[in-house]
Amino acid sequence: MDTSSRLQPEFAKFGSSPRCLKESNGIIVAGGIASRETFNDSSTLSYAPSSNSPNSYRRKGFFGLHVGETGYTENGNIGTLINNCVTINKIANSRYMSLACNNDQNLYVMDISNKSDAISPDYSVNLSVALNHASLSPDMKTLVTLGDSPRIFIMHPEENMREVAKRETIITQSDCGFSTCWNNSGTCFSACFQEGVNFIYDIRNISRPIHKIYSTRKQLQSGAFRVCKFSGGTDDLLFISEHQGRVHVVDTRDFMTHHVILLPKRLYDDSDGYYNQPIVKKYEDVCDVDHRLGYPRTSRMFLIDVDKLQKSNFFNFNRNNCPKRYPVAKMREDAVEWMKTPYSRQPSTKERELHEQIVCDPLQNACNSGTRVVRTPIRGRGYHDGVIQNPQNDPFYYLDSELELTGLEIVNAGNEYGNGQHSLVIGSDDGLIHWDIDSWRRRCFPSYELA
Image 1 (cartoon, rainbow, N blue to C red):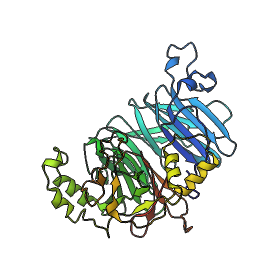
Image 2: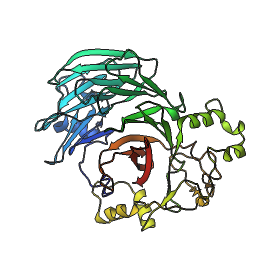
Image 3: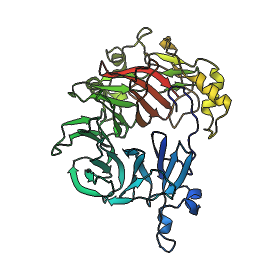
Image 4: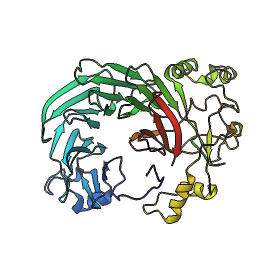
């Protein structure tokens, strides 16, 4: 999506549905599992054993490459199982390298510059565990990898990126590792694990982490950490997504400021064409409320006084202080119908016009209209027809969000004022949330644009 024009032009068409994507300077790489059509097409089997190999049928890791400048696209196979993560790293002028983490326990390293031949790895490293994520430091000297184990793998590639010269391993007491990232200076990296703990290490001394960050719902599936991202530039903010409904914002300059973005139960209300804005609360306040509500011991409805919660300072909403809702500006009915239709690989002119018109202008609206839940449950949510839900009458409107978060990304582009400010994009199963980063106050400021 073009965040300046709000359009969704088609850039590339891959042979399989990607599990992961990465873009840099017009180059797009995609990873996942090869579809039957892609796998059966011998022209795309770029890294597979010879036909005489008894295991040739197992080569089904999908890897796609698209170069925007030339329009070149290739669908290939890397690895024997699914590729969970792909990266793009610029290692020299006009030279790019890509990493692929595969469930077959191998990290594949590929030079994707000026590709004219079939895709194949330059080398691979077997780490004896299914791999989920990898990231290369800004100076290209250190590679951090996580997988289905409590270990963090630290590798130091040679200058030519053709082999690994040195390996180190950090053993944690956690479960499966899901995501890694580096700060802008390359001195610290973050590693998050699905049980709800995130470690931050100084690469100059990895004997112990310099800080730990915990989920608001540690050891619950809804609170499992999925993605971590540093904001880049001089912001020094770290964002970590929980599996459902919450994103952490941590100021890594001193780790004293820690907020949580709480998403509503329903991001988009298709009954009246309104988007519901997330709210930001202090980490300590969210954990305290969760503890008083009974997380994670048992069902909270038997443990709390709902009326008391509604009157608390945490969720004391009224018509004047209720979180803003954003209406669709024009052609609401057509736009809503367009959003419900399956994605078209070649959008028509009408679709592009509708997309421009569906972007919301920030307007204050009376909150007591609430969210009218539709008759048909969406994505398994068991709501009843005719129930009005809003922060004023539902104390769990933000605490019990079931919106699954599918990713985080930092957009390094100028906003409408042209000041080059970074922004955060949160991907959910209901759409995208685009927030500017307020560097002065060390927190997120909602400009709130949705697709």
